[in-house]
Length: 263
Ligand SMILES: O=C(O)CCC(=O)C(=O)O
Image 1 (cartoon, rainbow, N blue to C red):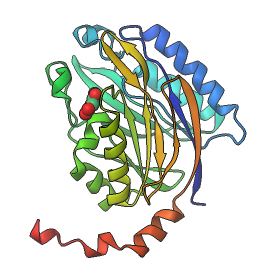
Image 2: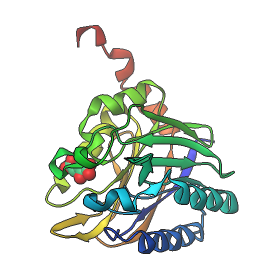
Image 3: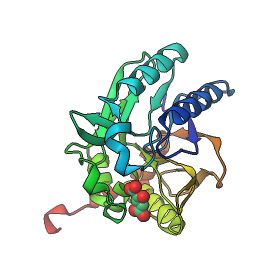
């Protein structure tokens, strides 16, 4: 089976209010699994537990991601779904990482990925520690990868995931105005150049002067947008077919035609 139902939890995130964010996320997770058809995979936005209240991030980050892991693991096992738990602020011995977890239908941790590229425009590198490993994993036996937000500006990373076999790529984000054009263009380019499905989940709402536009979207390997949100808090759904990845890759055999010894 190569098709999956996906649910994107396009939520608002209250900066510096983990309790409110955990409550909101739990409510949206429950709402998502009540849909018919029930989704196979749910995805949450970036740093949904704390937002980017970076000056307070040491205190607010989830110690070793424990609370998040317990919540998501229990939820996955109870509802037999996979969750790409967006990312969270994760305090590992005093180093805060922007960590993405993936849990499978049995509640087992399938992947852990720390955002590699920290966003200097927002001083992330002053408060967070960047990851050192790429995020490649399987969902229901299907090859997948993940990057986080700013990571999509680095095409080498998505290409590496594709070369390592990923046919779909998850992208949790907190991407604000006025860069909607960058968001849509970069996501679409990553889908077209790697001939893979791109599944993104961006937050909505306001934090200080920054306004987040949502527009979470799923893009097929031909670069067509299957579903795209607006600027409201909502759950979006889409069905993806990884068989399409194989069809596009055999029609335009980009991976066969690469000449990496020249670049
Ligand atoms: O690259 C961008 O324009 C947004 C990136 C960003 O907000 C982030 O990675 O936190």
